[in-house]
Amino acid sequence: MNLPLITRAIEYDEKIAIIVPSGANATTVEAFTYKDLLHTSSQIATCLLQDAEDLQEQRVAYIIPPGFEYVATQWGIWRAGGIAVPLCISHPRPELEYVIINSGASIIVAHPNYEDILRRIATEHNLRFILTSETLPNHIVPLPNIDINRRALILYTSGTTGKPKGVVTTHQNIQAQVTSLITAWEWNKSDRILHILPLHHIHGIINVLTCALWAGAECHMLSFFDAQTVWNRICEGDLTLFMAVPTIYVKLIAAWENESSERQKIMSAGCAKMRLMVSGSAALPVQVLEKWQTISSHFLLERYGMTEIGMALSNPLHGQRYSGYVGQPLPRVEVRLVDETGLSPLGAPGEIQVKSPGVFLEYWQNPQATAKAFQDGWFCTGDFAVVENGNYRILGRMSVDIIKTGGYKVSALEIEEVLRSHPDIQECAVVGVADLEWGERVCAALVLQPQRQLTLESFRSWAKELLAVYKIPSRILTVEELPRNAMGKVIKPTVVELFQSS
Image: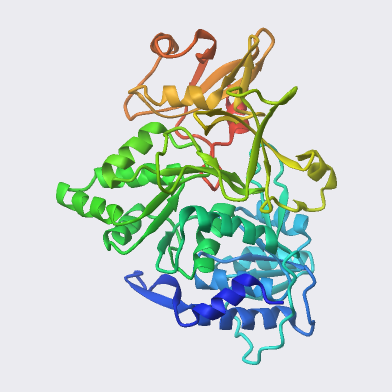
């Protein structure tokens, strides 16, 4: 049977699917229809199949900048019966090689920009290597019928707490994740979204790209993030949706603040014409949310999800949204909080556990990790939260954001939110560092505003007005920037190492 994503695309036919910048200075655009996407993906599928009738879940690793070729390749892999393994365009060779070898990829598809590094890996490991610049076949072979329960995608977790694991989702999992969001956020075929997120991560692949294509909407793709380019596009005033991570909103705010008041009005008007703006993948500081609301007239919709489950919680599209909260369970998603004794009492914190048709199938070739990740059929997220007035508030990762100090459990995210209100602090990361006396000592890595200095004594004196004594960091470290992964999440284990080596 044909995959529903493909069947729907056949119905959309001549409607525009993908728009990308073109020309030397990207001053013009090139538009591709759903018909173009179907045709090119069938050519790519034919090329991948060679003489086979079905790739039978062979893994195909691919590295292509955001754009039409990326989407056509992803669809081509699926239509040939393969499992798509997207590679991160900013990763160095060791990380690319790790994903290729760990996933057992037999084919690598690469854009010419990445030929040097990827061809060497393919040669050394005797893998088939295809460049996107190669001529595609004109004759399309009959493509296999793909069962919806087949494995479709392997995404590698951020690796903030160890070696990345391959998260396997089926076509059915993807469909469940997408249709839940389409219902909740009311996607429709008249939507236009600007895509600026990495395409080796669930946020960019599912929440933006696949939702847009499922709905028959237009996906306007930029090959890389540039604040000025994004603002220019927003100023055109025809976008309906925008999704980003907090660090992107921070950069857009900074760019807005550098403009003339006349230009600012045009930029703000472009935002106001959209129906929805979303923030995710990391905690959104309240001050960023408030500043963005002043600029754009949008109270950003925060949601919660992860690679293994898709999206689980969301503030409402219509109705009251609360800063610092990630809302309630999305359609067809069950969520519960669990502590050491069982279900958390009402109003008490606990680990978020999720059950839904969107939950992943397995960690790739890691049955022990898969078994450990589930409890009675519920996926254990490792995130700590509390429900207040019916809305979930994330307290942090159980492993790195819940600090056990002097008999107390404290939330690093809660402390960070307070520290960001200090006039001299631009960014911060709070961690627990092993300590003989306290179990863990609360420590804060700080990025200060330009030309500012801060002593531990003055910092602690300020913090005592806002935080319980046991929550106040007893050590601070000033850094130029915080270590982050490709999605802008702070890598807390690296922050801990900074304190251990200082």
